[in-house]
Image 1 (cartoon, rainbow, N blue to C red):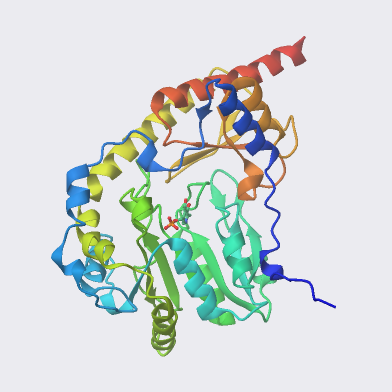
Image 2 (image 1 turned 135 degrees about the vertical axis):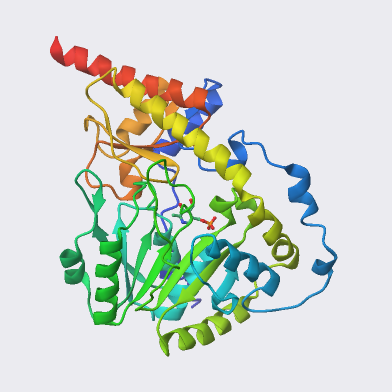
Length: 400
Ligand SMILES: Cc1ncc(COP(=O)(O)O)c(C=O)c1O
């Protein structure tokens, strides 16, 4: 008798289309307009790139040589170290590993820290990037809830209760996506003291670090002191608005001998793949140096859309915006008129507006909508107006 072909249980995913994806596809097929308030790809948001400079950075003679280095080419790592110097952090290029994406950086760290079945604590709500990554590495993610009270906070004691003998690391996004809040210095100290007590590493995703809104600022975790093993992740996809270039990194720091052991082991993980290619590494310095132009355009757009949002929200009483300190998104609290993705589906079908439902990011319960502040200002204003009209109509109906 022939045995049945069996796939890994790790990859037994439900890949069927969601109702929201179906509604978006149907709307697009119908030819009716769709205002996309989920935009996250900066290369498609109408920003002006210095195309000639970006392309010419790729045409360097040095990239004709194959010089395999598990950490990445020194010239590229020096450029990343310089980026951190601009954030008042001293990062030795020897503590840096280049990767093709932040996702790849996470997967290196999961391999470094975890055996199958080990646990990593992650803040919720947050970006759902880690679910699949963890599953592929047979790592269990344990969400720890953030709570909102005039800003987002972490509760160190409830966090402590989630730690088991299998916990290996805390992962957090700083500033967080989509809540747009920075981890405070006090929270950092609490996290570090938990890590020290339980022998855990800290993984900090800082891809949005450079996008603080006016009046707010956050300190990079690459700034010392580093009482515990800390891995800061970032990359070009947000910092230079070049997600297509696939360049990111891990900046490791911490006390000895942990740091030394971590760097040694990471070197073997990275050497196993050597996934960075030469042209991108040779161009990285030029692209990092020219990031200010894009960052200014993005921040101007984000701040303008946020102002528009606040003005439009004054026309109704049912929607409120949560406080935001950084990033590319805003979180709206709306009446929970439909469960799950129902409200987002209704907005696509009946109003031609696409938004992300809160459950996508692990918000508790219903009545959360996430809108992208990257969206073109005209589409953003029209989309938010449509959402306001829906709730104004509901309010009028309930008053009748
Ligand atoms: C918080 C966060 N981290 C990482 C990423 C992915 O970055 P990369 O393109 O470097 O994998 C995203 C993408 O939106 C993100 O929001």
